[in-house]
Length: 143
Ligand code: DQA
Image 1 (tube, protein in one colour):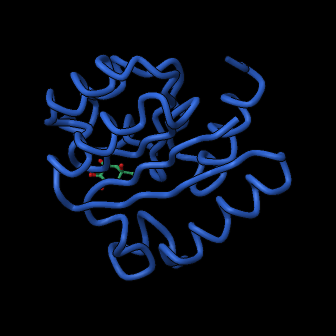
Image 2: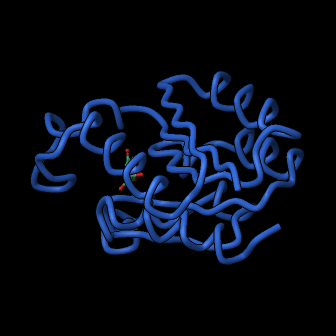
């Protein structure tokens, strides 16, 4: 099982941005957590982060035939990007949506998730643990 983990805009600012919302751990900490989880679960994982919508669309398209599943935290693009939704639908790989914070208990504009419409599962508000749950879901789901 080879999973692609995609993080959207400002996730590279973890540890600096709004620590009351996202915590004090950095993006490097998140990468280490994901890589450790994948190793423990016997999964292959590649992590990708971009602040650019088109780069995320390109990466999702390129995942076809390379990865077995996608874990995606589209960050702010969650709530705006039909292009990311369409790319997930086009690649048609099993996808899981992750949010570090609990988006449903925040501002109303965060309650809409376009990307989520192409995802089988969502983990929101669990911090880094959400990424672990998403990887486990893909592993247990199989192909
Ligand atoms: C986020 C939630 C989004 O609303 C926000 O724009 C982000 C991060 C999260 O992980 O909690 O940048 O996706």
